[in-house]
Amino acid sequence: MTYDADVVVAGGGPVGLMLACELALAEIPVVVLERLTEVDTTIKAGAINTPSSEAFYRRGMLPGLVEAQRAAFERFSAFLRQRQDAGASSVRRPPKFAGHFAGIMLRGDLLDESDPDFDGHGPAGEVGLVPQEALERLLGARAAELGVELRRGVTLTGFDAGDDGVHVHTSDGPLHTGWLVGCDGGRSTVRRLAGFPFPGTAPEITGRQALVEMTGAEGLGAGWNSTETGTYAHGPMPGRILTVEFDGPPADREAPVTAEELEESLRKVSGVPDVRIHKVLSATRFTDNARQVPDYRSGRVLLAGDAAHVHSPFGGQGLNLGIGDAMNLGWKLAATVRGRAPEGLLDTYTAERHPLGAWVLEWTRAQVALMRPESHARALRGVLAELTGTVTATTFFAKKISGVGQRHDLPGGHPLTGRSAPDLELSDGTRLADHLHDGRGLLLDLADEAGLRAAAAGYGDRVRVRTAGCAGRPGLAGLLVRPDGCVAWAADSGGPDSRDELGAALRSWFGTPDGAVA
Image (cartoon, rainbow, N blue to C red):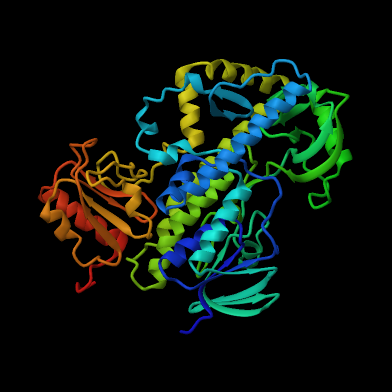
C-alpha cells in the first residue's frame, strides 16, 4: 500500500510534535497538521515534571530546557523586584519549591531528598521550570531538523478509516495514510469523528489564567491564595494571575477574555478592591471537566494528550501526561509501521498509559474538592495543611507531583523493572542517557557477560548493545531499556536464568531477532 505519509498527526502542539519527532527518529514518514499558523503563545503550563525532563534529556535536548529554565528564573526574580518596588508587604524569596496540592504549597526544606525515588535522574532532575511555549518552540526546531513535515494553517475536516489505512480530509486537500493520531486537544475533532466514548465528570468551576498589565497588585498575596470566595494565584512572573470561582462553568469558553472580566474576577476572589487591569497580554479560561477515553486506540486511529483525557490544570499534570503518551506511543507505532512489532505491542500503549491518565483525573478532582469555598472543604484543607508541614507528607506529595515514582507493571522481579532507567555514570565517561539519543532500545552490559550480549544478537537496528562498568551500581549486571526509557529487564547477575529472562524481554518488546523464525 502506498501512502502520502505512513502517519498523520492532527495537532502540532508539544504532544503532536513530540510524537512526530519520535516517529521521525525511526525514519517513519509523518505529516503534522496544525490549524494555527504560528506557535501558540497563550499562557498555559509553566513547568514540566521529571519524566518529561528525562524524555528531552534522553533525546539530547536538555540544553534547550536549561536555557528556558534560566529565562523563567529571570522572570521570577523580576516578579520579586516588582513587588518590592511597589511596596508589597512581606516580600521574600520563598523556600525551595517542591510543588503544591490544591494551592497548599510544599516546602522544599521539608523534602526528604534521600528517598530512593529521587535518585538516579541525572541532570534531568535539575530542570523543571519550563513553560509550554518554550517546549513547543524547542520541539518545532527539533522536528524541522528531523525532516518532519509540519503543515501550519491546515485543519482536519474529516476522515474515513479502514482496515488498510485512513483517508484524511483537510482544508488543504486529501491525505492517504496508514495511521492517524489525534493530538488535537481537549475538544479533539479526531476523537469526536472516530466515535470514542468520553466518560467522566462535568465541570463545576470557571478558571481564568492571564498575563496582564495592572496596578494595585501590591495588595495581592504572592503564590496561591485560598479565600472565602474562591482561589487565586499571583506570580511567579510579572503580571501573571489566575482565579478560580466555584459557580459553574463559563457560559461561553470561546468568548475573548477581557480586562473587565479578569478584573472583576480577581477583585471578587482576592477581596482587593484597588487592583486594576489595564491590558491583557494573554488569557485563557479553563474548567474542571474530567474525562478519559476507555481505549486510546480504535483500529488505525489513536489518541494522545488532551485528546485522550481532560482535567483541570491544578498540579500541572496535563502537559506531562501528554509528553509521556507521545514517548510511549512513538516507538511502538514506529515498530508497527515497519512490520517489526511483536504481537500486541500497540495494545500496551493503552494498557500502560490509561492507568496514569486515570490517576491524574482523580488527583485533580481531589484538588478541586479541597479548594471549594465551603466549611467542610476548608476543614479538610486545614488538616491537609498540617500534614504537609511534615517531612513524610511533603515527600509523598512531591514524589507524586514530580512523577518520580511512576512505574509500569512489567514482568520481572527486579525493583528497577518497569521504572524509568537510572541515569548511570559509566566507566567510559558517558551516561546512560547518552546512548538513547537515536530512539533505539539499549542493552547495557555492566558485568561484561558474553551471554547477555549473545541474547541480543539479531537486534542490531533495534537494540544498541553497550558494555561498560558502573562504579555506582557494582551489584547490577545489566539493563534492557526500551526506547521510551523504561526498564524492560534488569538483573544483578548474568546467569542462565537472567539470560533467559532477557531473551523473553527482548522478544516481548522488540520481536524476533533477525534470521529467527517468528
